Length: 146
Ligand SMILES: [Zn+2]
Image (cartoon, rainbow, N blue to C red; front, side, top):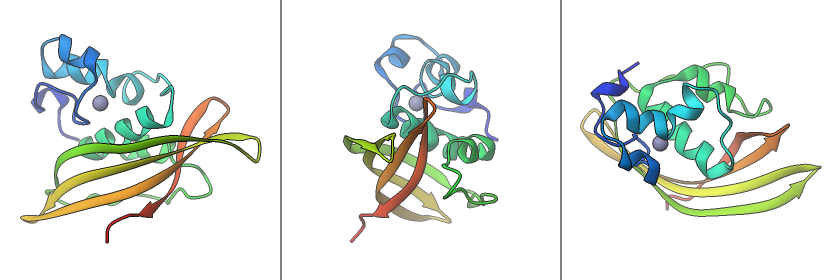
């Protein structure tokens, strides 16, 4: 896993306002996605979970990604592309979608850019999230790339 202190002066997800006020990469990460990934706090909503999962991809934190994946859809393990360089996350839309089967749900549409083996990829997805016992989890996604 890359050392967060080797990262730029904002959280990999692009940072939150509180992250920018403090100096240093570790502080930025700790104030933003590190609260959920490293300190065990629960993201308050699906968009914070989405950001922290992007950051976990940057850090190649398989345990966090699996733990925040709804059981029905959770893969057995994750493979990370060797040498992948994540270039940024852009949240396009965040829509709470109400109770479904007694559980709170939400959708987050995003564009993530990643370069693998010198080739740039743009992932445009609308992800579906479910809140189970106070814990938001990623369920599945619809690919929005044309
Ligand atoms: Zn973050």
